Length: 189
Image (cartoon, rainbow, N blue to C red):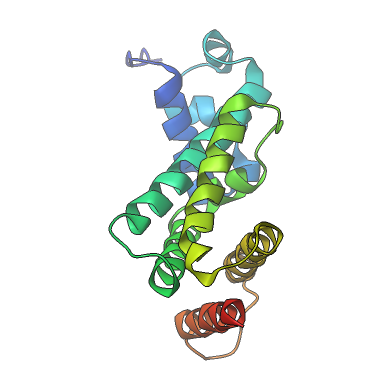
């Protein structure tokens, strides 16, 4: 049996490998055995960095939220608020879900909301969306409803696409864009 090549194993390397597995095979594929095989290590080596699979999944959820936030922030940068910003954010969200299907699942299943890192990232994501819809002049309560509505719209399209729920031969991107525009028109009323 040939010896295993030495790799620099750290938390970041493990999380990146887990993210790749999740994106390629789905979130349910993340196990200690599959991750160890990908890293060419023995499963107990993972315990040197995490408290088992739950610890890896917690870190992966946080990583996914950070990556989603960075995608949204990058897209929002330099955009004016209002329609242009909402369209740009919704497109960034949809693109993130398409390019990172496994991470997207982990972003939705963020662990304990009392986790300070998760809470901070979640607040930043909400803050970007709130900033984008401010020009519509909504009161605070209406703004929260609007953020929830937009998130539901974005998530609905992303999840249905991932599960093969759009079977008609119509351009899904066009359907998505029309739905976002209809949502924005609703904010204007």
